[in-house]
Length: 306
Image (cartoon, rainbow, N blue to C red; front, side):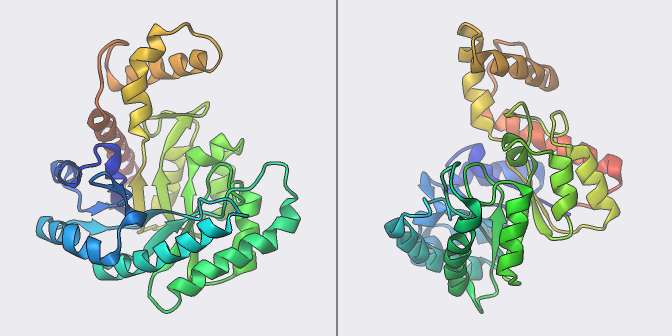
């Protein structure tokens, strides 16, 4: 297995992101925010000029491109056209870096929509994305996410089966399934034979927590992946900013409503991190803890990883 990560969760600055990778002796990243700009905002020419030489010099490879493609309302035709153009540039970036995947989503829909009637519309637009990657050697990597069409296992399966294309593959995110009210273990079992890529994100009651300490069944998933001989990517996505930047304000405010849940879960994270409630924690600290936890679980599972 290969450990990667959304290193922009430590900093938007590429040199800082690469520094963390070197510190952890890791060689893969999932670019999303680079030097204050989203990856989808780069043209291939800009990336080749400003980013690729740095990655090459530092020995950093790309596991997948963490694009926002598909994060647009299903009826936003202008947004869809703009993303088609962005995807064309991202395909060129993927090709020049030897990256095989571009992460996508299946469009924002209203929660009260007629999902059965919406399926062919969603599939039609996803096939528009597929037309862009056809023959490029790059696959579209669909992530389950809140508020999009394929947010729960049944709709992920419906889209996957309807498209039925080798260039359309699945990424699994346990935390996102939890936040959609799904059992992440059952979701994992339902799609593990179709999943080629995993985002490593755990949560408790909708709040991201260190890997293996929440409701995501991360330990069981990693043990099962080891037993099944999975040799793909595990990409760290701890959402560091929430806990690192919000925990002290949460402790200072009256514990009402959602703040009550946040305070309870943040106390759990404090214990796992080994810090007091009012000790500041950096985004890098949170990222390093996530890496520490995934390595520990992989070691216990007897997994081979890099």
